Amino acid sequence: MGLTLIWGVMDVVNLTHGTVIVAGMFALYLLTTALNVPPYLALPPVLVGGFLFGVLLYWIAVHRMIGRPPLMSLLSTFAVNLVLIGAGTGLWGTVLFNVAVSLPGVSVERYTFPGTHIIAAVLTAAIAGCLYVFLHRTRLGKAVRAVANNREAAELVGIPTTRVLSLAFGLGVALAGVSGLLIATLFPFTVLSGDGYQLKSFVVTVLGGLGNPTGALLGGIALGLVEGLVTPFVPVSWTLVIEFMLFVAVLIVFPGGVFAAAGLTRRRARVVRRGAL
Amino acid sequence: MLRRPFFWIIALVIAIFALAPAIGNDVQMRESLLLAAVYITLASNLNLMLGYAGYVNFGSIVFFGLGGYICVYFVSAQNWPLAAGMLAAGIAVSALAFLFGLGVLRLRGAFFALSTIGINEAVQAFVSNFEPWGGSSGIYLSAEVFQPLGGPGQALWIIYFLIVGVMGLSLFLSYAIKTSKVGLGLLAIGQNEDAAAILGVPTPFYKALAYSASAFLPAIAGGLYFFKSAFIQPSDAFDLSLSTEAMVITMLGGQGTVTGVALGAYLYEELRGFLLTSEAFSHFQLVIAGVLLLITVLFFPSGLMGWIYSRFPRTQRVLE
Image 1 (cartoon, rainbow over the protein chains, first blue to last red):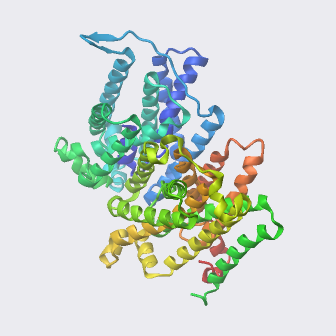
Image 2 (image 1 turned 30 degrees about the horizontal axis):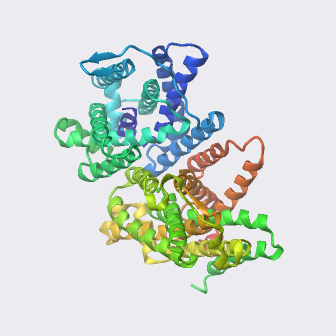
Image 3 (image 1 turned 135 degrees about the vertical axis):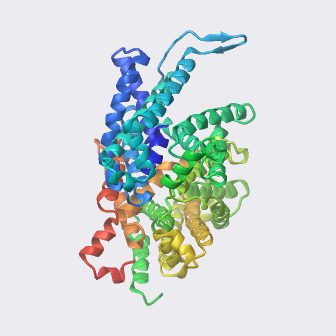
């Protein structure tokens, strides 16, 4: 969702996304081990920290790139990513980290759902809901969508586009950090595990359509289902390949996103196509 | 072409690369220049896509790794001579890249860039599960493969000269493409793809051609490189950080120029050697590369050559 927000609104592909997810994981790790914060109470600080970090990132790497060829912003975020990855591997190496979160699971007949999975799912849905309300019901959110739709026109009607852009970028990064935190409660991670999640994020984004948080939620669910369906039949290392093939196929067949193409959000798809592509 | 001074500059560079370590039988210098030659090969071929056509290829290393695998496989399992394995690697990877290119190059900009990462992941996953190539544990070469080249000591020199040759061919290829009609078409694509298509540039064909051409020499270099180390495994062959470095080099030297990329590669190799040996920075080599790239992209988008061109305008006529 963070990615789709930045991509759709700013026409900037944020290649630091995967690393920010990992940063969220490490934030959780450090907060729980060093300060003994209960895992889910780490959420607000990660959200705030991610937002501030995102705004900082915007002013360092992205601001000068707005309106320049997309290649340049791709390279500048990639450079920041290199710095972060390099620092991360330098400090922590590439060993596996794990945050132990134990919650009672819920059993329905033969299946047991671990508590961490349930909480992650509920929190994701809640965040998606908040984002939807923010984008559609608040003045600021409407400003973000206006900038996504047409930056010059938004400027003309008096929206401070630079501030809105940095806000959207901060929000996107904060969301990535939070998703990293939630993932860290489920799976062990390394400094380099961001790449896989980044690829997944891109697949989800193109499945759902650019700049469309609802589509991103549906795209995420769809990708999860595909993964679940595929895993019994092929080795685990192939899942990334299948996701990648999905990515290319979707881009070629439905350039506006599958859910946009299916007519679920036809009006918004038009907006996205005009504004972002 | 023989009359252009730039042709002779390239020839001179190759001669220096070949002779400098050979005169004093200086093995340490040979190893460092070998790495520089590999960097120049990778970067100048990446430049065909990035600098000329404006397409970011994050996964250029896939050519290098796949070429390495094909060459090492034919040499070890089929007992082919090195030259045959090398050519097989180049041709096979190039043909694959052409086919891939016709499909994937329909995507533009960021989408293409992302799918190149995907291609690398996909090929790596394929190789890791491909038993004839040793799966995830890779292929080891026995010392016997060096016998036809006159023993390991002499073989290393032969491989070095071959890699320098590949580097020279890469520079000539970049230069030849830049001064040709295809190169003009690619530069037009880099400026504005739609306008280029309307003016009659066969954009899909040219892009696939450039993609395929940029695969040929890195594949051969990969074959030689992994033949030299006598060992290949997926995580080394498809190491994304090498293609990252190629990108830093291209941007640092000046995208779209031939001299700049070669210069950038040489400087980067020296810098890397310095960083790896110094105590404080040895773990933070990627950080330095990232900071360099960021500064270049933010403040000097035309790189080292851009600065040289603006400082000494007359060099524009000689250095491509």
